[in-house]
Length: 134
Image 1 (cartoon, rainbow, N blue to C red):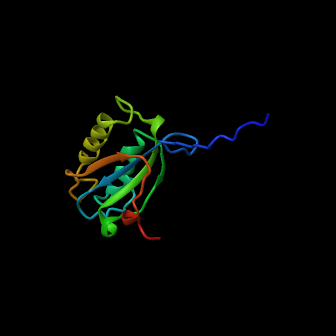
Image 2 (cartoon, rainbow, N blue to C red):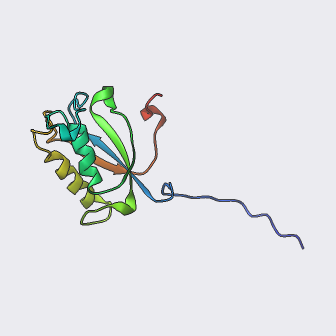
Image 3 (cartoon, helix red, strand yellow):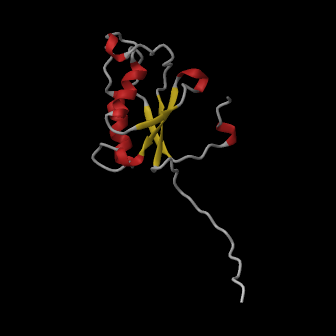
């Protein structure tokens, strides 16, 4: 008797690049396009590098996107979910802790006000209307 054909089903609710991924979007609220100085230079225009270092102290960054929202105020980072060095797994508490750490970056490092910056953690799901043009 032949084997009955089964309907193929593939349901994945997480992303893999060999590991589970978390996508972080940092909304700086203000224009960060001039915050491009190297963190070791001692200038107050190293805001983007300071944010990267703050995230890297907690998770391995696998990729990061360009500044978006008029090329100035939002940036997306892809991190390993299992590399998080916080008090909890990547969830609401961890995101809140990361957001607080980014907001606490001193004015001497970032001349732009980022005390209202927000961090959103998500999985991959880009709406067509929200896609950034290549």
